[in-house]
Image 1: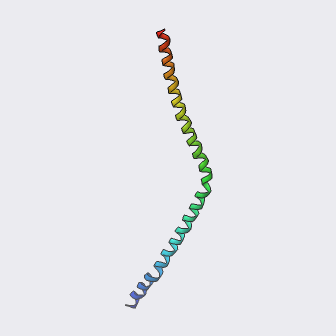
Image 2: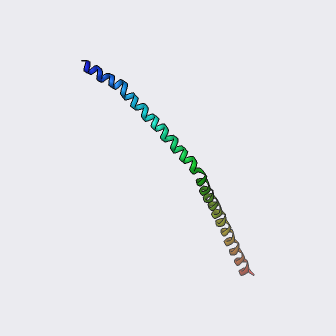
Image 3: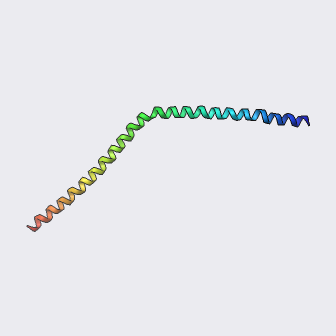
Length: 82
């Protein structure tokens, strides 16, 4: 019977101590991951900004090309009508 009491006490005392170590390790790893991400932000911002600028330029160029094509077709129609 005392053997079971010792096993029960073992589970009550030792296992929660192991769980606390894991949460501490998780806190440390999260902190390190966050720190690494914070260090990467300046490099990522430059890439993201250039992607956004390229996307805006592409959209603007597409709209301008569409306008130019439409105007050219109008000019050709006017020339044929003269």
